[in-house]
Amino acid sequence: MAVMEDAPAAGPDTVEARRRPDPPLVLVLVLMLAVLFQGPVRRALAAPVMQDWTTVFLAVVVQALPFLVFGVLLSAVIAVFVPASFFARVLPARPALAVPAAGLAGAVLPGCECASVPVAGALIRRGVTPAAAFAFLVSAPAVNPVVLTATAVAFPGEPRMVVARLAAGLLVACATGWLWQRVGREGWLRPSRRMGHGGYDGQGRRGEAFWASVRHDVLHAGGFLVLGAAAAATLKAVVPERWLGSVAGVPVVSVLALAVLAVLLSICSEADAFVAASLTQFSPTARLAFLVVGPVIDLKLFALHAATFGRAFALRFAPTAFAVALAASALTGAVLL
Image (cartoon, rainbow, N blue to C red):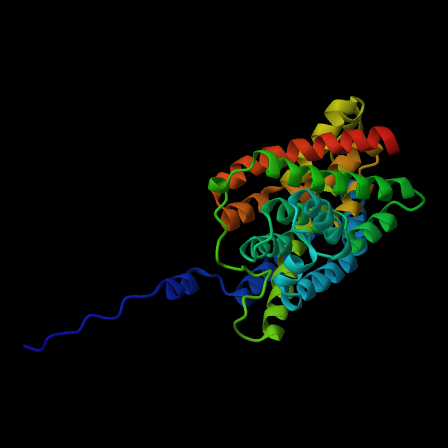
C-alpha cells in the first residue's frame, strides 16, 4: 500500500493571504452597491446637513494633505539617510544639557510621530541618554518647521497660536526628559532591536527603505487624517451647537475634552492644526491643548511605545506625558493666548 505524504502545512503568510480581501473585488462590490442604492445615496447627500458635513470634511483634508505628504517625505529622509550616531556625536555628554539640546534638535529636524519612535530607540542603542532621546521623541513631531508652518496656515492672522505651540512643545519635551532623568528606571525600558518602518537598520538599499517608509506613513497617517476630518465635520454639522457650547463654555472641561479628543483621533501632527482650526466653538487654549497633547501621546503612539520600549515604559509614559502636556498647554495658553 502506498504511503500518502502529508501536504505541507500552510504557513502564516499563506493563511494571512487567504484571509486578506482582494482589493479589486472589494472595489467592484462597493461600486455595485453604489449603483444599486444611488437614489437613497443621492437624496442623503443632498440634505443640508450632509452638504455642510462634506464642505468641512473636504476643506480639512485638502488643506492638510500637502503638509502631511511633505512632512512624511522629510521624515523619511531623516530616518533613512541621517545615521543615529550623528545625534550621539552632537548632543552634550551631560544629561541635563542634552535634554534641551535634543528638544531643539527635534524642533529643527522634521519627523512624524511614527518615525520619531524608532529613531529615539536607535538613539538609546547608540549610547544617547534616554532623557535626551525622549526629549527628541516629544519635540520632533510637535514643533518641527513643517508642523509650525501648517499651524500658521491653519490659523491665519493668529501668530500667537504658532508661538504658543512652539513654546508649549519645547516645554513638554524638556519637562519629559528631565522627569525621566529624575525618576526614570532602567528596568522600565527595554528597547526593541527592531528599527521598525521608520528607521534604517543598515541592511538592504536606502532607496528601498526610504520609499517603504514613505508608503507606510502616507497610508497610515492619511487614514487618521480622514478619521480626524470626519470627526471635525461631524462636530460642526451634526452635533447641536448648544451641546458644543455647553462644553466649550467651561474652560477646564473644554481643555480636557479636546485633549482627550486628540488622544482618541490620533491625527498626524502635520495635519492636526487644520482640525483644531475648524473647532471654532472652543477657546484658543483648548485648541492649543489639542495641538500639544496629540503629538505627545495618542492611541497609535501608545502601541508604538509598547512595541519599541516595552509595556512597562508605555504604561508609565502615557499618563505622565498626557498630564505634562495638559499642564503645559494650560500654562502657555494663559500666558500667550
